[in-house]
Amino acid sequence: MGIMMNIADLLLRPAAFFSGHLEGDKPDMKMPLAIVLLSGIVGAISAAYVSSVTMAMMPSEVSEMGTMLLGIGAVAAFIGALIFWVIIAAVFHGISALRGGKGDFQRTLAVAGYGSLPMVFGSIISSIIIYFSLSGATIRPVSDPMQISAAVTDLMSGPSMMMAGVISLVFVLWSANIWVFGMQQARGLSGKDALITVGIPVIIYCLITFLPYIG
Amino acid sequence: MKYQNLITVFCILLGICIIPAMAADSSTAIEGQLGVTNVAIDPGVFMYGDSGTVKVTVTNTGTTPVAIARAKLYSNELDVMGDENYGSVGSIGPGNSLEFTFTITADAADGIYYPLFYLDLRDASSLRYRVPVKVENTGLSVSVTDRPDAFTSGKKEDVTIMVGNPRENTVNGVVITPVTNGYETTETSHFIGTLTPDQAADATFSVTPYMETPMEFTVHYRNGMNDHEVTTSVPVTFGIDRKQAETVLNNIVITSEGDHYIITGDVTNAGLEDAKSVVVTTGSPATPVDPYRSYVVGALEPDDFASYEVTFSAEPGTTEIMLITSYKDKDGNLYSDQISVPLSSAAVPDKGSPGAGGDLPVVWIVVFVICAAVVAGVIYYSWKKK
Image (cartoon, rainbow over all chains, first blue to last red; front, side, top):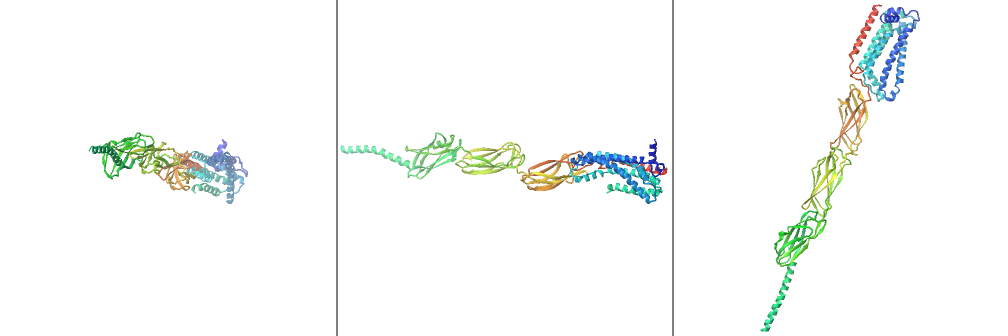
């Protein structure tokens, strides 16, 4: 019950949540780590499914290595979630330092982990959309290796796939909202500085994610 | 006086003896002034059952007319008709000729026969002459000198028939007529006319077979006034002409373009004859679509090639389609060939499901609106409860 209350506070009232979870220079990292691991698991499942679809396009001799490649994709997605956690925390830490922020990096790391929870929801919904999109598509093996890249791009650039990406970004905004409150607590920033600290990388992230669909 | 009477009686007796002798000498003279000067037989050589004429010309080379009672032609082997016309001939003047024509029918085996021409003279003498008549039953020789290696149903081909005359006499009215049975011919018959001994002539027919029944050609000809015919047949077996054009498709590349596919490649004529009006298109289950429902390559000489491009659409789940090549030969016969092409070159979104292609499903828009509203509400709430 306590955990559920904490999660509700994290999602709905982050200002109140962080005031009770960032005591000291070394805050408790179990929950942030659990959130990031959950994010990694969801990402790994989604990556494994997309990999299996991509494998169907490969020539038969490549498809025979499907299980191994599928595993590589899942592990890469899981590790990617952990790396993303550290990188986004480092970025926040760096920008906040420029805005006069003070505090240990572990506090920033905790905020970045907590704030990743809405992104997990976004990943789940996006994965559902991707699943239904690809399960209805007719996938045929691509005989020409030169065409595999083009075929995958075609497959991933459809309207449904674009919608999955847009919904993910909506949840990124939710995470950004949590990060703003978290960075205020963790680094002693003003609301404006926290907004700048979080806003710059989030906007860049949104642009990087969305530009392929525009291009 | 008595002696004179004896001399008179002696003279009478002598006269009685001399007069018959004188009479005998006159008969010999008349027979000698008649001669057979010409014999004409038509046809020159009879075939079994043929009817013809034997014309004998008798000329009086003497200075006095010769009376002729009748003329006949006798034969034990040949049937002779028309000699009753010469039951009372009359006389033939000096220097004149008379023709005696008899009709004979050769109901005899091959050989040379000698009917006897007999001219009965009124002074109890006669003229006899043997007329040689040949009977030879050999007909015209018919052979096929040119035909295709193999026939193809519905394809026009040339067949050449040669007719030779191995007989000793000339035949006329030679006509070659195809007996249409299971095939068509451009020519209804071919007239050759006269064939002298050891002469040959040929005729070419354009034939289009539709079934594997032998083609028959009948040669009609006349030996004198008698009609004869001989038939030859050409066996028809359908197969593949070793020289005919053959289209081969290479370098086939399938690319997906929106809601349809594009096939590009090369078509090569691997045969020994020209392929004309070469067209490449797609067949079931593919549906040809614009802009290249079918691609007209045009004429291809042997070992020549050209590229093509055709567009088609296919239902989702289609694994292979048919690529059809058609061409015509120089006679306009249409040939078609098709190969199966797997659709393995593209990942194609299924428009009928909420897939990666096509229109954006409404359900995803609703999901997006709900998510956006929830997130906006949460953010608003979090700032309000700050």
